[in-house]
Length: 67
Image (cartoon, one colour):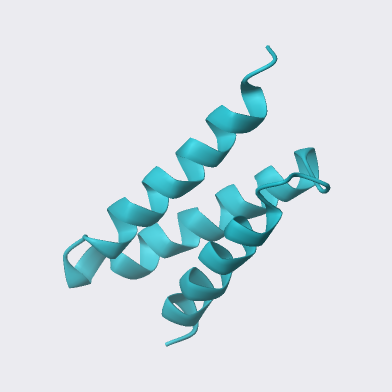
């Protein structure tokens, strides 16, 4: 559909919010899901106007995964 890119960005944001608000035991796992969702988004839409926002979400998620 013509809204697939928007939908995928909404899913990325939702996964990020879920990870950010999770209990400590599940945070790392959920931030890994954010990273996976980011790569899926970027692979499908590398020139997206939402790229900068997606990159920022990825940077934050990556920090949490690496800790």
